[in-house]
Length: 458
Image 1 (cartoon, one colour):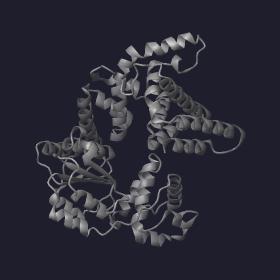
Image 2 (cartoon, rainbow, N blue to C red):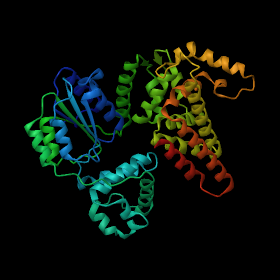
Image 3 (cartoon, rainbow, N blue to C red):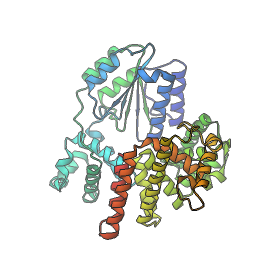
């Protein structure tokens, strides 16, 4: 069943309602460039089919860029380890694309190369696989050996204009991210046979993909036995607004919150109705509004302003989450706002020191009431008084973590568990080396700090 012609949010709700009602297909294909909706739908489907602890043993996750067809078939035909349902996820598969998709692939690279370099590099890896090239073939000026005529024969006019500007750039970015062209997909005949014969009733296959050639036989086979869902970024503002409203309402309902009538419009003005950015801001709003049930325009105006302070928060939180794409975007946003690179370096160093002190405090065992699943409200009542007492004992000139805002301390204690002690010490040494280098040499500060960010997010 192909749902690609429907309204995106209605399509998502219909599919989820059918699954909850027991009308389940053995195979689901989710594809398109609206990453947030695809990821959210994927996890909602998994949560319905595998509730609670069933995911621990009966969820099997495969990297679609490297998994071969035989491995997929073997997994989907094997009964679950424990009684109940089994879900096999093949994420970001390239089995369903073809060279006719190349113009779309190149356009995706062009649209994301500045704002989402990591995504652009991953898409470029798909491009290399589809055309049969390796990154090494194109590095060190190798791309110049491909004539304009050969380029047009291969992918049409897509990306032909200014190829000498964007192609060397994406080659360099891909090298920094260590992107490799995966082997070409195996023949899909075996997969088609398994789809037609069917697999155990309790087994479900979910595939996600960026690019799909609907003319491929395998795509038709999936549509015959399963459900195909295309989720792409809306181009018209009204449709974008409706998509954002539905997605935001769904997220807020799960958190027990609502949006005031003017809030969604205010959020859209700040983010351009970009779904990914809007939902990221909404997650931040849910945290900052605490026990408040309704998020209003005033909350949005105070939290989603693109000030230097907001961008610094975005950068440090992205580093803690090891979200490279968001970290690089936030770093460049700070540069665009005119913040000096040494100040940015200082902010990163402060975050690392906070994490290191947080780790030492937790390891010392002096906060008996603290645990990493604790919420901020509980922390304020049961843990912060202990920390405040420690800070008082150290005197008025205390500049350690204990002297900072309770929310900063709370995050440092919770997030310190994501890093080892040796990691944090190494990052501080790296920061010191960069600081000295930037003050004594003519090296490009933007490139130096980007390398630091990449190192921390790997």
